[in-house]
Image (cartoon, rainbow, N blue to C red; front, side, top):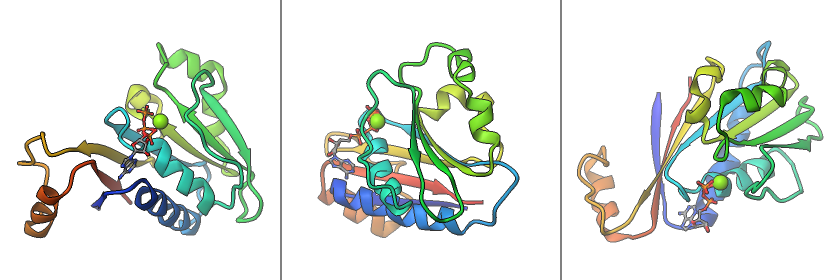
Length: 171
Ligand SMILES: Nc1ncnc2c1ncn2[C@@H]1O[C@H](COP(=O)(O)OP(=O)(O)OP(=O)(O)O)[C@@H](O)[C@H]1O
Ligand SMILES: [Mg+2]
C-alpha cells in the first residue's frame, strides 16, 4: 500500500516522521533490522523527516545532515531496540564503501532500526522488507500534472509553494 502526504512546513514533515516512527515501532518484529529507504529530490525533506522520526523513537540528540560521515549511530532507550542508524549515501561512490562500514551487519541485526537517505543509490543491497519513502519537492513553477492522485490533492497543490510530497509504502 502506497500512501501520499503533502506538507507545507518542515514541522509538518517532522510530525509525519514521528507518526511513522510510532508505526514502525508497532510492526511485528522480524529476524532482521527495520529499515527505511529514503529517496527523492535533493533538499526534499529527508533529514527533516528523520529529525521527527528519531524523536518518535525517543532519541534526544538532534539528527543533522551528515556532511562527512556516512553512518551515524544513536543509542535507543526502550522499545526493545538497541540502536538507530542514520545512513546517508549522498556522497557514496560505490556500494562497497558502505559494505566496508558494516552495512550488512547493521541491517541484519533485529535490534536495529536504520534509515538510509539516498537509498536508491544502494537499492541492490537494501533489504527486501525496506519501507520505501519518496520525497518530492514541489513548487509553483513546476507542472503539477501527473503528480497528484486525487481531485482534492490537486486543488491543494496549486495553492501552495514549497510543498513536499511524501509517499510511504507500508507492507
Ligand atoms: N514542507 C517541508 N518539509 C521539509 N522541509 C521543508 C519543508 N518546507 C521547507 N523545508 C526546508 O527545506 C529543507 C529540506 O532539507 P532537508 O535537509 O530535510 O532535505 P534532504 O532531503 O535531507 O536534503 P539532502 O538531499 O541534501 O539530504 C530544510 O531547510 C527545511 O527547513
Ligand atoms: Mg539530508
